[in-house]
Length: 539
Image (cartoon, rainbow, N blue to C red; front, side, top):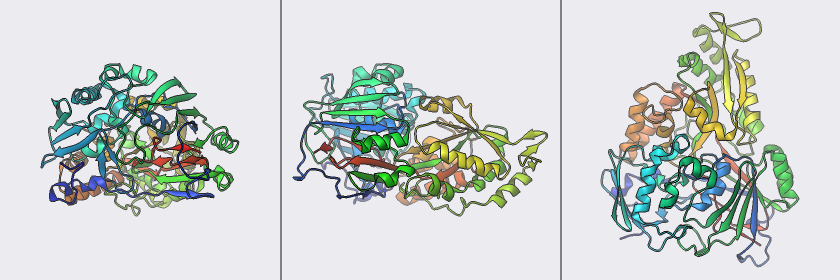
């Protein structure tokens, strides 16, 4: 039995769409590896202090969707598989091998022996079953994991180290889903905790680091897991991690994060602001960049709102947004304006830039046709009611507010009055679930186009209140087909339906940009443009 499927064979060619992604990774500064160690040899020990911009208010990997929190909590859990960020290939991790039936309705994983959780309990097929069976009970914060398992029929412990997951219908996306943090495996005791307990107290994982302390909105502290010896097959170091300790400090202001890095108070920072790039380049700092796959940053529309039910109004918003101005003005160097609802690094992405062209004249014409007439103050009105909308947003990235202030101005230019409503990062999921919003700013990272189904199918969580339509059929079809060409065609059709009906307003592709001091080595991006710190060392 091979360690992983032979994707050259016809049987596995059907899944190849899952396993291709492109990577943008550049390093700026002196020294290609950011090395401050003359010998260049990895050394064990030390503490890495990482400043992040926000805290999602939860330390359970299965419930966290914000990159700023995923950076830390990802280190506490392992997944059944891993995904190579350069090739997109799915490779072994907790599962040493797997088998998939011909129509992708059944996935059988053969687990590595000898894996233990930080409470001393063993990884078995029953533990995996317990994890997957509990996902539907996670609530609003578990929407990603729930989407991955939405059509599961059963999870069966075949023997102590063999687990079989059976779906009601073909589910080609599931193999890639098992590589994500959202399906990171926790101990059975951890699974039995309530979702709220797991959020506040953390989980018991088998990962290379263990949660030691969580102070909400202040810090997350992790310690090396002694005896760890079952890392991903992608990692270069065998056994335990190099670093003894990881400290993630919550520092909301981008300028303060940059200053802390320059002064040596921290070793790495997230979400490098455009205004801080020049000061950080060169010297003792290295910038790392990678474009995120998945749904781009944009405006999620509550399609059930009376005003926004009108496709002309939604299309007017789409045409009124000048994406290039926003990308060039606000975001880090290299950030691309959205050319689809999917980022260009996502498998089966389609270039729909013509449909997303900035056209204020078109936007005004669409609003005229919808009966919204400009008033003396420039704001349009209909039946005595002004065209006013609220954009809900959350401070999990420094670029959010300035980007939305530009969107606000651009929409005002065509006669739409916009109010910006800031909430707490921890309220993002509950805001979507509750539906009390007009438009909401956000993105979702995943290196698979099935993220469209998770986000826009009216058959699933349907946070954006889309009506049942042919889009549902297309989204279900791309998840079910094992034909690579057919899946690509359906994903292309889904993107067109979302953009042309303006169910969502894509704005810019998210580009992760980190900065590290030159003493930090081998801090690597994973396939979702998050980080893995097992191989990272300081010297």
